Length: 123
Image 1 (cartoon, rainbow, N blue to C red):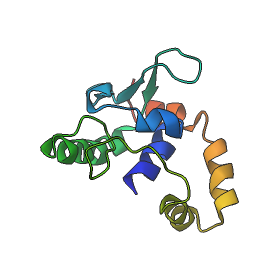
Image 2 (cartoon, rainbow, N blue to C red):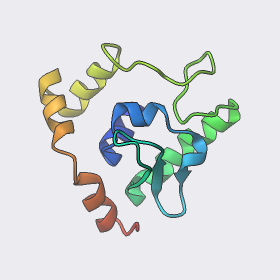
Image 3 (cartoon, rainbow, N blue to C red):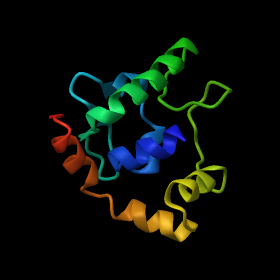
Image 4 (cartoon, rainbow, N blue to C red):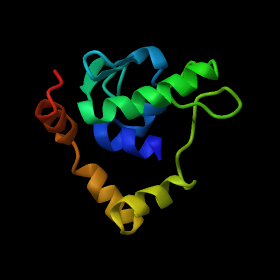
């Protein structure tokens, strides 16, 4: 569920999320650094203050497991596939719809994280 929430609160691509390291998250400024995104450029993505505590708890639990990436498998490797696993079910639970509904909601969140972070008081 944390993967889904992170995708929704930040609006980042799945490929960017699975490559994020724990050191890429800045809790002080409520932002995540994306290294070499789709356009081969680095960028900063904000997340809302209301999501900060939940993300910090997840990051702490990953640090206790000596993880490097924000999301790692039980084999100490970054998650490499988010296809037809349990994530579709999580989207459906959040939105009460089908997979296409979840995709359309995710597609509409391009500016949502920035707006939400600004309203929450993050820079």
